[in-house]
Length: 193
Image (cartoon, rainbow, N blue to C red):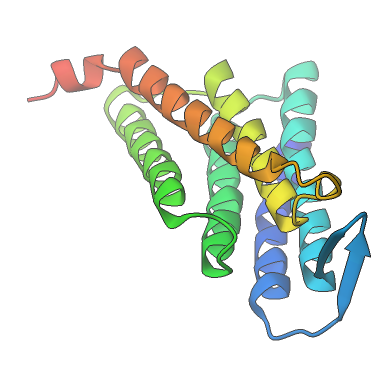
């Protein structure tokens, strides 16, 4: 297993740590940052989430720069992203921070695209790497999740709801990238019997 794939596996390993810190009954107190008060657990989990998200950029950049792109990496990297984002969004719904209907749309798109990737891999033997709309979707989701985990820090001071705006932007890019992926691979539906 090459270094980019190991970094991706590290991202997957950070997910249960993130989840445990967010959902276990840990009472580490609260922290206040520029009028954004939050549990310390949310702050720590946000840092873990951000580190895990940054590894997405690092492994992809390193793989392309050193010609280490593999089918395993093309499959594992988006799967790791989906696991991380889905875990975070589900926890945010559980905590009442994110609206469930938006998260249902986002996670449904992830299942649909993952299913289509599996069909493409099985029928055509190709593992499709993430396209630019999917990368934009991932980064908008990451920003929205980080802002929600940090209780809109540092924008809570003026009451500017950047976390909510970021969530709506991520919803837009989720729908757009899902449509783009389905449209570009529509031959699967046309040629199926």
